[in-house]
Amino acid sequence: RRWIADEWNDTTATLTGDQAVHLARVLRAQAGQVFDVVAGGFLRRAEITSVGEREVVFSLGEELEMDASLPVHLLMAVFKFDHLEWGLEKATELGAARITPVLARRTEKHLAQAAAKRVERWRKIVREAAQQSRRSDVPVVDDPLVLKLVVPTVEATTKLLLAETEQENSLSSVLASQPVSELAMAIGPEGGWAPDEMKLFDESGWRAVTLGPRILRAETAAIAALAVCGALL
Ligand code: SAM
Image (cartoon, rainbow, N blue to C red):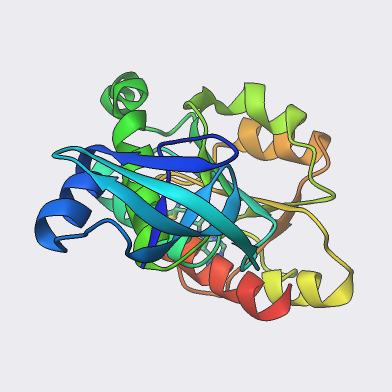
């Protein structure tokens, strides 16, 4: 298992909070044990130098090769939190590098209002999913933003909008037909994208793609899309 440092400098890394409690109490870690620790985005071999109630300190050793996440930035419309959170966990396991929760026109109002208070929980979910799936990096989860502010600013070289209304272009055919170095993909809310949002995507250089003829739940669409990316990127 890999641990993700909460604090670090050139020579030491420290786990605090739940990770430290788990390591100290459940795994009964002791000074001298060696683990892999992600510190500042680098994977390092690390030896425990001290174990406290809520703090485990490591001395950092050699740098290890990282397994890369997919170069995928997901824009996920905010939808029912339990479904969204499951989707965030799975998107992390499947390798998404960055996730921006977006407030779309058809995001339910009470969810849009509550989203900002939920984002720390979302960061915790992806952090734990990254550890569980042995990723060496944790996806960035941005603060939730209104869709129309985000869409024109995304800078990926390939920008794809997942839309169940699209009939022609499939995600797999688009990815197979061109080299993709940075991909942004947008998944809509339960009610789908509104017409003015589709127009905005179009004007901002996003291309609509389909995952097939069936209408998928948003979280299923995220998982299916990332699985296709994993196979083709
Ligand atoms: N508007 C739809 C309806 O109620 O008929 C449902 C929207 S779907 C539950 C939520 C999101 O998942 C969509 O906005 C889209 O981004 C994505 N999605 C679902 N099925 C898809 C498909 N077959 N192809 C591409 N995207 C899909």
